[in-house]
Amino acid sequence: MDKSILLSTPHMGDRELEFVKVAFDTNWIAPVGPHIDAFEQEFCQVTGAGHAAAVSSGTAALHLALQLVGVEYGDEVFCSTLTFAATANPITYLGAKPVFIDSDRNTWNMNSDLLREALLNRARIGKLPKAVVVVHLYGQSADIDPILEVCNHYEIPLIEDAAESLGATYKGRSPGTFGRIGIYSFNGNKIITTSGGGMLVSDEPQLVAKARFLATQARDPAPHYQHSQIGYNYRLSNVLAGIGRGQLRVLSDRVAARRRNFEIYASALGNLPGVEFMPEATFGRATRWLTCLTIDPEAFGADREQIRVALAEQQIEARPVWKPLHLQPVFAECECIGGAVAEDLFAHGLCLPSGSNLTIEDLERVIGAISVVHQKNSSNI
Ligand SMILES: *Cc1c(COP(=O)(O)O)cnc(C)c1O
Image 1 (tube, protein in one colour):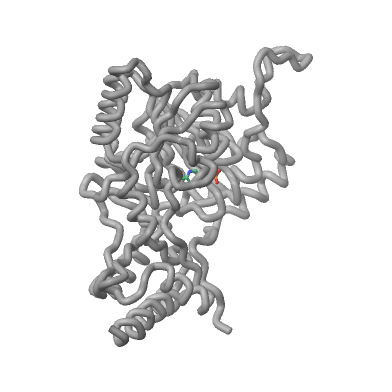
Image 2 (cartoon, rainbow, N blue to C red; image 1 turned 120 degrees about the horizontal axis):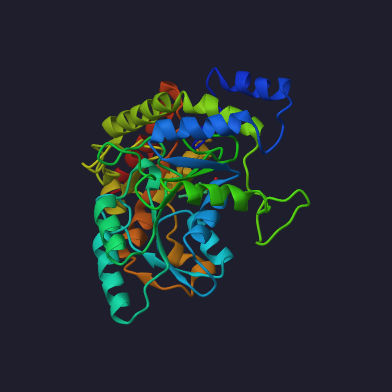
């Protein structure tokens, strides 16, 4: 049987073990230590963020971010609908309610016109949301400027979920560093990984200091463990921060490899009828964290699910584009502004194996399998 080709797997560089060994040799096996401090500083250098706090996951970073901008029980938070559930789950941890916003066709990310219109309507009735969470999906930045402008106009803090877009650019800068707070993820499937981990960034040092405080059980400065607030155990391990330091050093290689995957897929499959790749917006550079395409079943001869199943039969893992959150049973009661674009991208969209460690042979196997689905089905028409 052929070896399996997975969607996105960890890809270690040469230095990670060395950093981990330093942590062992110095016995910094704890959620504090020199690797954490260095990882935060190096992360700021790479992204241009002002300040950073390393935490146990991207989800934890979002939970802290929402709390730091003042989201409380009963509040509403506007949020992209086309994303992973982890974007919106922390809104509900705080007892707040997400209101979902549809995507823009050109970026697949939040439609700023819909956001502006929705905020205008809410301002009229005096029911503005407490925060906006914009997602930078699949390695591509959202069009941040118009989103930031309208958020600033209503003085609503913008939180950027850049979990999937470390290494991308928006007008030359890193998505995640424009809003009041940005978050990143180092889960095993992301462009770089610490096995699990996340980062919260902001230009406001007191916000990041507060994130560290909340992430370490909100201990007051007293020797006897005094607490005036509820805290969390959300800090990253110093051992994992060592992995992160090694991974940061190969980030640009990982971006190049994933973009290469995209180029190979696009040149081999881009001319098949009914195939369209996720567009790259002109305002920046996408990492192509995942290569995503949409399939028009009429033109192609098979739908995205038939392709996915045919690939799975050959041990190739492909996944549908995220099911929009407003279609998720758990968020069924939540309001959604628009939704048709995200629904269409879900109905037709497929993510191909995209790891930076895929070989040319792996990519050719995926391409061959998709071409066969097209040939088999188009000959029936
Ligand atoms: C992965 C991901 C997260 C969550 O990050 P974890 O580190 O897995 O908690 C949040 N948002 C998006 C869009 C993601 O893809």
